Length: 404
Image (tube, rainbow, N blue to C red; front, side, top):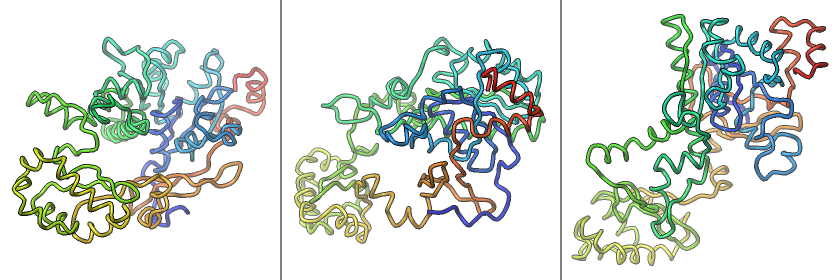
């Protein structure tokens, strides 16, 4: 677990300074992605630190103010504390914004404006500033000021209505998918605005919405509704093809997901299962008949698969050119040969020693992404203020007044 050795040049966002007022997940994930690609991200936190520093089930790391989930979204950032509820803190923030390329925040719409730190106020001090606002529903519309959280957006977007088994009711995804995907969209939006600035020379307001992001993720299903009037329902573990052999099946010690959706794949599956006789069974002659007799087909598949482990079936079916995959636990996939060979798990330094975290999801030939050190709360406050032109005496005064 080490940093990539493919860094043959400057990383993509080297020289870009991001002032990061975000908290919890969607915003921090976005700035973290850009930080891995070379941006200098200055994390601005209240004196007690943001709430996610103590979120999750790892009590020992929470006690240090470094919950693993927080580290996963904030490694490599520089950290300072600042009280922007007070005029002197606002003035510090404005001075920092005047020297930044990007400001990213995810307060409810209107909060930063009331503090004198909104887009219209800050563009007066920095016309090149990219001001990215991340919120549940965007900066406009009748619900713009409504509070949002991952579960609410999963529910509202329609994702939950598609997820789970019909008998059990709607189900959330097993991760904060609305937050995480909005974080990725935030990074893309900021990168787009920065590139556009190379043409125009001007900054701009960037409006990122969790709900908009989720509907983008659901764009294929949404198109079936808008174009063809399809009313979607829960489909359990079946693929969007609805074919009965594109589903989850029980093996001897776990589960295997099949993606058998063509005639050649169906024939290969039956031969690999030792059930070539099924290919001559009139009940399964074509896809409509296989769907009509799906319970009997499932019984045939799972009866055969009970004779081996999920890993054995994955290996055997893959060798037979049958699209499939074992359902892995997180600890299994993190130790998987493909993940290990790609170097996806990398070490990040912390004040308490190195920790393994997930690195960037793509590779660049000319300057690969990197993690960086996980910052302690307020670790870089003095250095950041000094770089902004504050004298040692001024920094001491700000500290004495609890502004920083």
